Amino acid sequence: MKLFHNKKVVDAYVLDEHLRPAELPSPGLGLEKFQPLQYTANTPQKLEDFYNSCAEKLTCLLAVTDEYTDPAVADPFVDAQIGHLTQLHQAEQIRHSEQCGRIRAAQQTRLETLEIRSAQLRIRETTLEQERAPLEGLSARHEITLFGRHISTGGLATFVFMLVDAALNFSFLQNILFENMFLLLLIVSSMSVLSDMTMNVLGTLVSRRDEYIAENRRFYRLACGIMFFFFLLSAVATLLIRLGSMNQTYGNVAADGTFAVGSYGLAEYSVQTLSAFVTACTGILSFVLSVDPAAHKVKRRRKLEVELSRIRNMLEHTAEELSTLRQASDPAARDAEMSAVALKNIEALRIGLKLHIRKLMAERISKPEFTDHVFTTAQECGEALARQPVLYTLKAKH
Image (cartoon, rainbow, N blue to C red; front, side):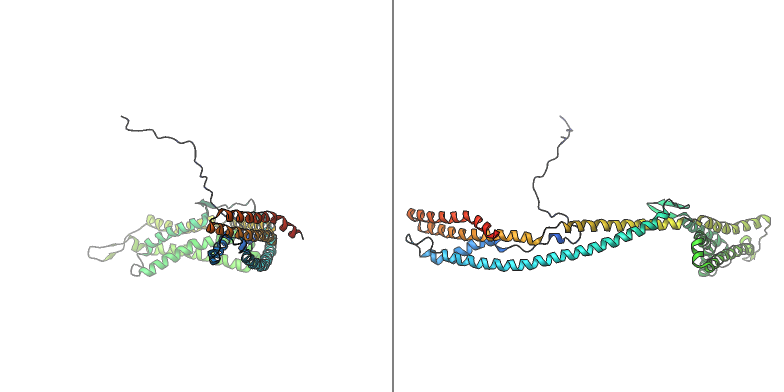
């Protein structure tokens, strides 16, 4: 007995032959799809309602018919009803003519709007290409790509350096400001900003030196001087804090609870001095990693490329809608064809109602002689219907 059976592999796909109605995709507002309303005479449900209402309205007449009744007795009633329907069709033609005019006007207005927009987008595209051309081939010196995003090495390194400086400064300042935690955190954060962030800003200013000097030379020099002054202030203050807090750093608490100043020598002075210069080194590294003359140009080029891509997408959609509107069929021409079909349906309805009434009369009388007579008149109506398309074609030519 087999415990496992091989699965049957099907190599062919079964196609679903069931068709589903769907609209073709249309760009823009879809004005090319706008058409006048359907004519009453072209609606199958309306035609069926005419047959049903005719039988209901002639119920009394059919009730008094016999084998001597003329099969054409109800023809005047049918002709009168068809006359009403013809007048209704003429009224619909007037409304459809107005609708076609409004549709065509809306399409023309949209065409003019799209042509103006297309011209404006072309100008914008040319401007962006001219701005991007001098920036081609440039690459940022200090940059990494992470998850598809471009990140400046200088900014990332400055953030890390600020955390390192904050940790070092906190370990020394807590011995001095241990009673005021808020002031301690404020000074630690400020020193990190002064030692690293100022040098990052200075590096950015130096990277765009030509641009800033062209705009305002005095402001550029003043900004660079302020950033460098704050960095020196932080470096000197850090060194003084390290040297001034050596008693607290190397002291200890005696057995009786009193604080005893510790002894320190050259080694301790060297440690304090080196820890102070760490702050200066992180600031200098922030400056070096932030100096990148091409970084802002590369960033500008990427923004231009994104904007250029958006403009080209808009141009593509605009061109598609323009092409669709220019190739759109004339709603008036289609409405004229539908009107001709409706007129043929009206005449076919005239003959059909007469045949339908004759059928009801034959069913009620139920005599062969009367049925043969009805068939003869019905055949004449059928021959008239067969001639009708030719007659309407001649009328259309006139």
